[in-house]
Image (cartoon, rainbow, N blue to C red):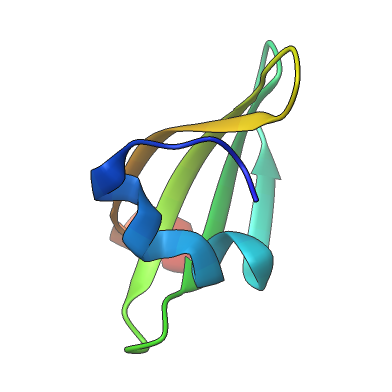
Length: 66
């Protein structure tokens, strides 16, 4: 489980069971996945010193669902 803020914790299933993964630049990865309520989220993840860190979490935008 990656480190995250309290507001990003609702997206843990989206991270653990991704639908798509986009490797962007400088160690930033965009993970697309659904939570337990089947809401599709986009998660911005960076590689932390000890574990991945979720730095961005919101409902997935159309450009990531194509």
